[in-house]
Image 1 (cartoon, rainbow over the protein chains, first blue to last red):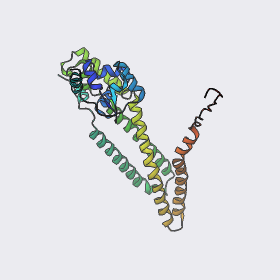
Image 2 (cartoon, chains in turn orange, cyan; image 1 turned 120 degrees about the vertical axis):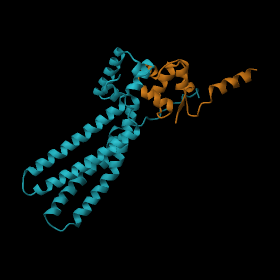
Image 3 (tube, chains in turn brown, red; image 1 turned 60 degrees about the vertical axis):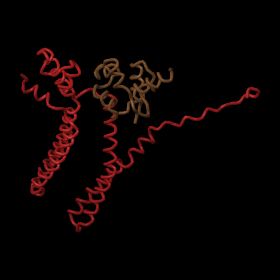
Image 4 (cartoon, each protein chain N blue to C red; image 1 turned 60 degrees about the horizontal axis):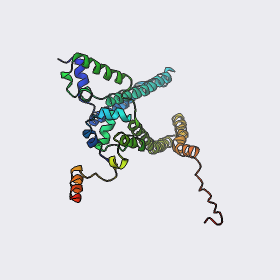
Length: 81
Length: 208
């Protein structure tokens, strides 16, 4: 099982599934399956998606569940303070 | 006001439950059709030479029907529903689209259905490959069992023309079983490349 942040990243950039699907060359429904965790992408697709978001692969995909972004930001602020 | 065609296309997308029900109904129908025709043709077996031809036509018609039906089912499940498409493209319900946009979406959905559903991507390929692997694994177990049962029935028959007929069928089936059992190993041995040898590291004296 591979966890991903595609839904969050897509929402941040105000992209529809169709937009992302068009950019990475898959069907719209495949993006839905990816976001729901029903499909583990190939390495090629994983790299395409992370390149599209201009992020390293490990920022988009992870073998462990991602911690909520709000929690991470709060922790960073606490460390800086 | 939506036309009937639009209402049909707007119907809820094909869910897993509907798909499974359709497949079960399809398998049941095919089995019943085979049995019905088999029972209907049996009395003509020894009286007319057309029996063989009729059996041939019926069997191949059903095989064609089976493939065609499944293909239609797969197409139906792979086309995005009209409402979902409209939400994706325009962000509002179908009923609120202008006539021009409705016509455009309808034309696209219809074209996609005619072309055989959405174009396959890597997920479709993976799903198809997994389905084929699973089907082959089932066949690899079920066919030998079926052949053994067939042999058992054949050998339990009294000596005579019926037993000879069954024996020929059993032998043909067993011969056809061989490729099913050995093909994966044959393909693997045929296609596997040579192992990459470990590079031979040469140590130059004085550089170690």
